[in-house]
Structure formats: C-alpha cells, structure tokens
Image 1 (spheres, rainbow, N blue to C red):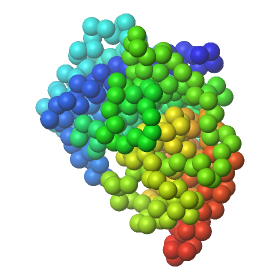
Image 2 (cartoon, one colour):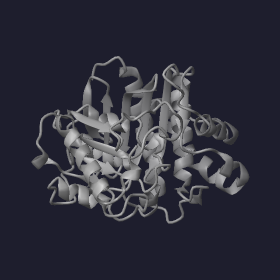
Image 3 (tube, rainbow, N blue to C red):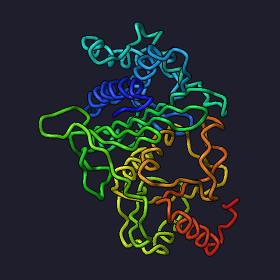
Image 4 (cartoon, rainbow, N blue to C red):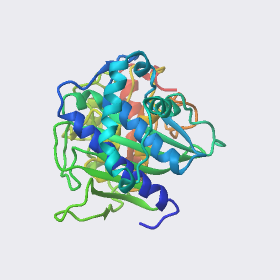
Length: 359
C-alpha cells in the first residue's frame, strides 16, 4: 500500500510479527509470570518483553519520536527472577534480528530502559509531534486463559491518529462473525493509515491466504436495522448494569453479536465488519479509558465509515494524558446513524435515572 507512512508501516508490521512470536511462546505456558499491578489488572512476562521489543525497534529507526506504553519496569527491577525470565524471551529472536528488521535491547538494563521509555511517556498536546503508543498485550486476562488478545501499535501526530497496526495472533484474517474470546485461527494483522483505508492480512504469509485485502467502507451508509454489536458481556464490572442491553433493545438489536474482552479487539471487529456498533457507559464519571486500549485501533473503524465519540457526543481526545480524562465512555456507529445511537444512549440513561452520568 502506497502512503506517506509506508516506511513506518513496514517497520511496525515486522515488529508486530516478532512480538507475536514472543506472545505465542508464552501463551502455551502454564506459568506466564503474572504480576498484579496497582489497579489490580494482570501483567505477564510477555507484556514486558513485547513492550521492550516494540520500543527498541521503533526507537532505532525514529530516534526523535516519543513513546507511550502501558507497562513500567519497576516490577522487573524489584524481582531479578522475573527480570531474567523476560530477558530470556528476547534471546531466541537474536538469530533473525536483522532479517525481521527488529532491534533488540543489548542488555537487561537496556531492556528496562526501553520499557520505561514508554511506561513514563505522555502523549502531550496538539504540538507534541510524533508519538507512538503501544499496548503489548491487550486482553491480558484472556491471554492468561489462552484466549483472544491483541498487540496494539499506533502512531499519533499532534494527538491525531495517523497509523494503526494491530496483531491478532488468535484471529484468522478472514474470520466470520460473530466472534468471541475463544475464536481461534492462524492469526492476522489489521492496519490502517489515515485517509488510505483499513486492510487485513495474515499474521504470516502463507500459500493458502491472500497477502493483503483492503476492506470496503461497510459502515458508510447503513440503517438502524443493520446494526450489529460488539461488547464485553461476561468479564467486566466497570459498565452500568442493564444499560447496555436496554440500549440495544431500544435500537432493535436482537442478538448480542461479538463478545470480546480486549478493547483493541473490539475496534478490530468493527474495522473488519464483524460488527458495526458498540456502546460503553462506565458506572462512574471519573472512570476513564486508557490511551493504549484505543489509540490507533479506533482508526480501523473510522477508515471504513465509522464515527466514534464519548457518550456526551464529544470526539475522543488523545492529547490529555495516559488516561482519556476528557471523555466518558464510548459510542461507535456508522457515521450516518451515529446520532441515532447516541440518542438511544441518552434516552435509556434518562429513563433509568442515570442522567448524572451525562455531562
């Protein structure tokens, strides 16, 4: 695909392919070196190793760019055994480092420094220039259970999404919906460049799979009757009880559709046309999304005709910090009927006595 970001795209795809190798080597293991973070979410040795790999690779090519990622290396510095296990995950990639275009840290100390390059990074405001955002394993809770997860890599310029590359090691390139956390396949990469569309390809080229497919703008002009949802129905308690089902009932959506934990995979499902709407209302106004769960991946849906706002109808602001503190929740739908989905959200929240969740 020709675009102003062809070089960045080539580097990003190769980095995601190598990251997928790391994740798959850990996926089959019973002991994933899981640590519980302060927010009670899990992190594994794969998360640390992949963030180090992605940062080192992109930094070696674009040394003046900035980085934001989910993890910091504090737990590794405090736990020599955990540090050793993460370092050992990178060693098998040494043999094909040049061929894969990847750049690996040269020592455990450099590995920790690369992780912290992201872990303490901030996206900055509209004048922030180029910022790469990484989520090494989105869906760690399902990853630990050997289920669906994603590797998210995004490039922002001045806080605007310009490039998205998402590795989906468990999702086949030509998946048919609806899908859930247990859907398995050979794996795929879904990517988008601003103004140039959304594409899907196999995680690795094979003789049986087409190398690349551009996705048609499936969300450009559909009716409410055509809506198909993606959400998380069984694993999160952060959403408003009953509101999501009521909103879908108000819109006449008869089936729940795709059921996915990882937010990045939900954006992938929307980009691929396995669904074309999602709504999420947090129980508390102060609860917010995190930039690495959404940056870049939202572009996959926008490039096929989707529109994404928060529940107040405001555009998602990726410049305010590591948390999306300027927004509450998400409403994503085909551009021409987004206003109708947003109205259904407001109507249901008013009827349920939860209008306080609106601005």
